[in-house]
Image (cartoon, rainbow, N blue to C red; front, top):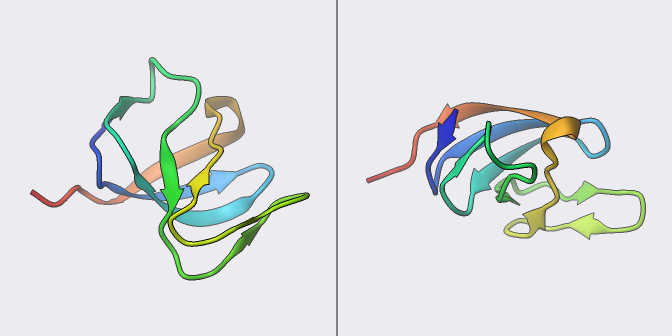
Length: 75
């Protein structure tokens, strides 16, 4: 699936749980191992040793998460 920069995504991650993200660049989910997604919600997401604030790049490995499109990029 091709994801365009600016697309709002629902992320379900095995380590960081469920959160809303935004694509920071175009990518193809079939071709890349790490998805370029930043946190796009107001709530802080806590990892094992770090807190992610709105706008922070979130580690999203293909094998550890699933993503669904909530809102297409704005043109």
